[in-house]
Length: 393
Image (cartoon, rainbow, N blue to C red; front, side, top):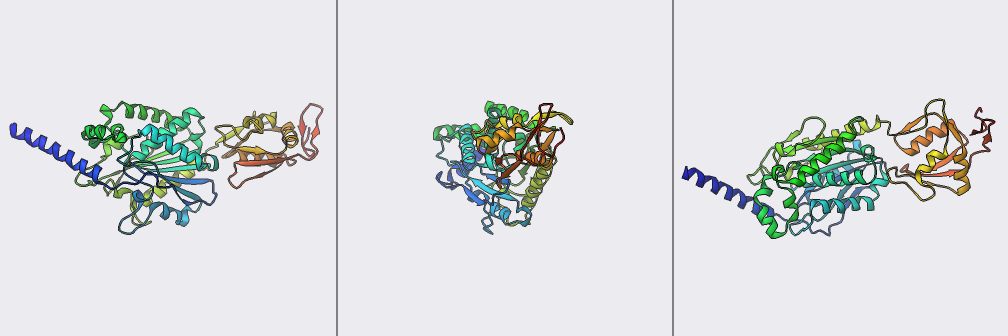
């Protein structure tokens, strides 16, 4: 028994030393590295890559052998031509004093500064390791602070070796992490001793479940099957989280799992097809609805006022409507009939305009900025409705 006990403690000590060496000797990025907008064509879809602890937007996703850079592979993939590509940076170095909560605030601000939530109707996240926890925290905060629109706008999330239930290595290194001030490691302790992750997962389940009726957002999980420096950093058990389909095993270690050699790599192909699957699901959902039902008339003003005109936009709808005051007033006076459904507010106005041809507006390429001009001599009906000249009273 003494020999076995001694062997056990020697094994634990060896693991601690191994992990300490891995964590404290691994090169890491300087926090001032810029974000990488690999492609920005002004489409309405975007894929955002988010690295994990000790990573950065460039090195995390670059294959050392082929020098292939995953975001660049996607940007140059003809099948993904309709997607803009962004890889974001945050301070993930050993010198970082920030918690996951604080990092989530940084990432949220970065995305808002890049107008990701303003300019895109479909947002997809590809997250490595702790980056997945950061994205979870950020999306939950946005959902709670603004509205449920993120259930519609964020269409797909891929978690790759994300420690939803923590990582054993963080337990072993907790004392070293606290002494060294490496705050993210403290937040990565395993679920059974980590109240923070328990709360995060409960809130994440609430967030995902709200979108289950329309199957948006789609959530996918992949995990490593090979050890890193002799140690399996995030086993399948610790990646479990509310998701669609089964978790996908990848023959790679914790670092190489996000470094595809080329577009023929299995992990690249799997993630690409999951994004395409989520995009198809997004297209099938009637995201926006307005109107009181077939045969019922309602003033268009009741829709336009949702955007707090003329002061840009209302949180949760991300639409800017402009035009001189008289034009907006004239358009708002019109009585339109029916129920309208569309993926974006601009698409909805397309439907309304098709039935009310005297309404004129132009839309920006992002479909999030509309400019109205006055209708053509709208007429007043005896019933009090105001309609286009060609419409029957």
